[in-house]
Image (cartoon, rainbow, N blue to C red; front, side, top):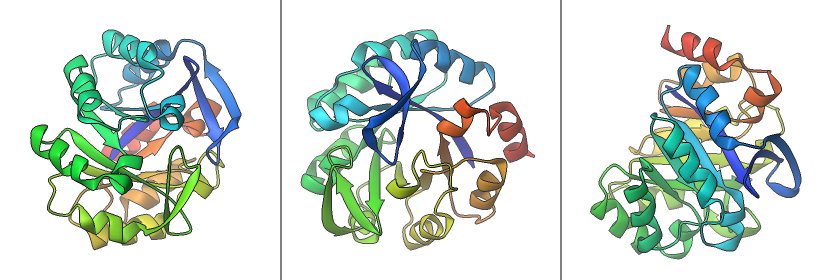
Length: 239
């Protein structure tokens, strides 16, 4: 199971939100690229980047910070937030992003996901963010009537590289991930599922890994707060 250290970008800084609320942002680093280099030095295989302003604006906002991270690190990075058309997808892949994450657009324009997955094999993931089993969009600001498993199933034959499943109520709350819901989703679809939201301890990572069906886990706040040591976690997962 791959551990993805998260760098959430707001106003050019690395921050963490509490349950997705922009006004409850804690700044952890003024230079996100330095944070990325620290994660790389600790031995991570991937980085998980989110343009938070972009998720609300519907277009890239923290591009300069993302480009600095790409310039100063060599591990592959996946990026979500404000990526809602083919031009933006192509731009980020050309700039060196290894995988783009399509969230809002996966609900509003699923044909775009299919087109992108076909055009860029292995480089397109779907981000499914949910409250109580229902999908939320536009930086989690809008809730829909779409059920998580229904949305995931709709992309079974699209060729997407992964589904990143976030339980919004757990995100940044340090309460542990929703292992049951994530495992259920991973068992319901053939697409690799990456867990996001609430991963706050080594025990959380082990619980996700031990399901045997979850492909990856994203952690942010716990790494910044020191509740989770990245090197230690990577060693434990590879043991």
